[in-house]
Structures are given as structure tokens and as C-alpha cells.
Length: 159
Image 1: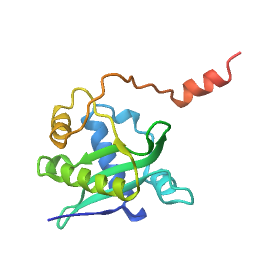
Image 2: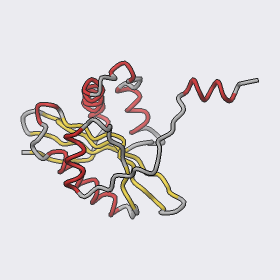
Image 3: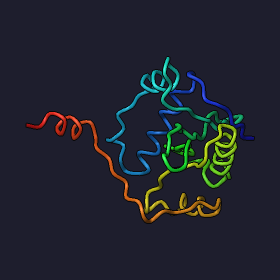
């Protein structure tokens, strides 16, 4: 039996464990710079920067998360951005990802978001297939751009 609920500060270790498991799956564990303490501060402190739902199994504890935040589109308005959807490997292909996505979609509607947005790695076929089954729109027009702390620092301080 799976129960979906809003995460609490007591869940930060489990959330971090699942994020590390995802990073290992994506062969990028070395890129994880967060910690449970950072999650406690950034998700449950005075100014929360993210929210999270957890999928809790009666015997196995937290086996999945959907970690997200709200953003804004000048063309569409309020949007919910799903940063990570993670299901413990031992519990994948049991419908837990779909449960978390449906819960998140309901929450987006309740919060008057005009859309839900996320990314998926182009080689993650199981996730892509799940998103296709949910009716997701795959956008080939937009290219993701990012600058990490070092690039930001170098650029701001150049010259």
C-alpha cells in the first residue's frame, strides 16, 4: 500500500537518499552537492525554495518523491516545475511514478498553475514512455541553458 503525502522536515534524509540514487542511475553521483541539512534549510526553513511529496510504503518507508517549485511564465502565468521524480529502483514499474505525477497535477490545479513543466534525459526510455502515456508534450523547439556557480562568478567578475 502506497500513501502519497506532503514531505516534512523529518523526511530530508530519505529525500536526499533518493536523489543520490537517481544521480547514481544517471551516472552523475559526483555532481550532487546538496545534503539533508541543505534540504532542511531550503525546503523547510523561513523561505522555502521547493516543496516535495513523498510516496510512502507501509513496510518500506519512503520509496518515491516528487520535488518541485513554482515559477512564472510571462506568456502562460504560474507554472509548477517538477525538478525530480524519483522512485526507488526496487519499487519501479509499480505505478508509483504515475501516482506521484497525478497527485502533483492535482496540486498544480489547486494552486492555479497554468502548466506543469519538467525535463527528462533523452536516454531514459522508461521515464519517457511513462510521460508519453500520461499525455505529456515533448518540446523540440527549446534548448536548455544553464550557468553553474563558477561560470556565473567568472562572468560577473571578468575584466
